[in-house]
Length: 244
Ligand code: CA
Image (cartoon, rainbow, N blue to C red; front, side, top):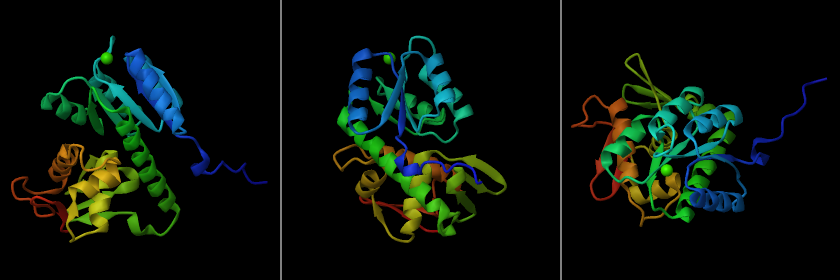
């Protein structure tokens, strides 16, 4: 007899790990996420959060920057060691750009600045899961999206990796989805608003800075020169265009 058949991926409930020490915020997030049909687990401590991420394999992590025991940057780095691909969204009370950049460099995929709208965050999470569902569903099919070539770089979406000139770079969830979306429409300008809506699940009123930050991250890995990008081109006042 063959091995028992695993339940289809689509039927599995997505699990969100919340690492946050403000009880009211945790309650609000849990209620809103569970209302949308997601499972939630939470901890108010960084160390326990790292342990939960390892033991329970969440599909997404919401991570507060200011925790009582360990700071969020360190927690993020530790989660990345055991879960290189899980999307991590940092919840930060600070608005300094340096913290955001440090958060992204420590392995976070995105950040939201408190106070934020729980509804908007839940919409973002829903968009991430739809993209994950889509890329998961395409894995068994044609190999069309197996690799994406951009100049001297080759992106491997399933492995969340980019190889350029013999060097391998890890890509975060948003970097993979961004390059995938631009590649699907190669040579065609894609509006910032559309990128935000398709990948971040938020509409135009929200900040488009997230998109710009991820474009910079991608360019660092893809382009020969950041000052004169040749592949990820800015379409002024509109968005971006991929020139493969
Ligand atoms: Ca806190």
